[in-house]
Image (cartoon, rainbow, N blue to C red; front, side, top):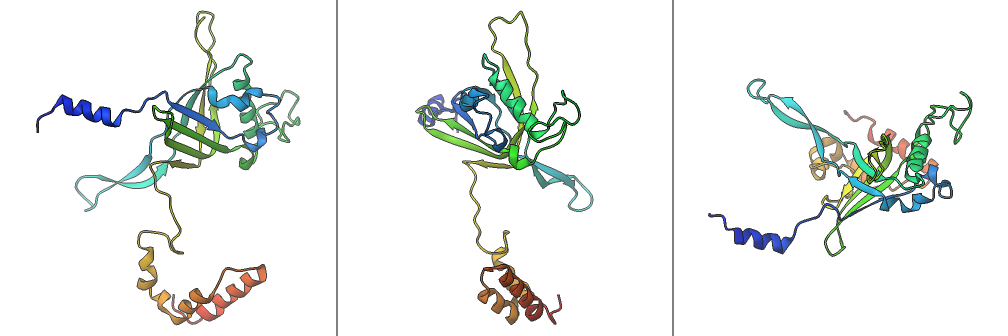
Length: 256
């Protein structure tokens, strides 16, 4: 098949190409910073100051194996890593952006001991670590098409900054914007291109539907009766009663 530049141009025109500058970054205010709005007004306009963001790769870690115990080494998936999420924010004239991220960092680990080892900030002594639920949050990044409609979304949950970067200032750079690099970590990633999971039964996994057929334990009449007749516990005492039923009626005498 020969290459035809007209076909190439036609397909690019049909589908279009995504542009790097059509995006927005929204950070939900962490609980610990909910009282800081009056002190740092720029907080409500934070999404207008994110200059760049590098959306993360899907980083599957692998381990080296030799399927036949000899011969070439091949890779098999072992785990999944969430890499650091790097961003760059423009700093406003009142340095509110810098204040915001410094306050956020201080809610994570109180780095101030200007009034001594027993002076607390936000009920945290110097270098004391806060509860994660107080400082983590959700970031949503939306990439847009040319017509302004959302095209792709990244959602990062359990997110908080772990690196509030250097601030470079110089007398020589009269026309340069002051920027702040911030690196985030997160616990969960959701993207438009992934499928949502669903709970189909009590045994998740690729072969879950066959588990009760294959495993002899689930073929006993006691277990079948218990699974079909036992509902969701309605109280603590109901939970105790169901546990007692399992212990006495099902597992007694079974060879597990």
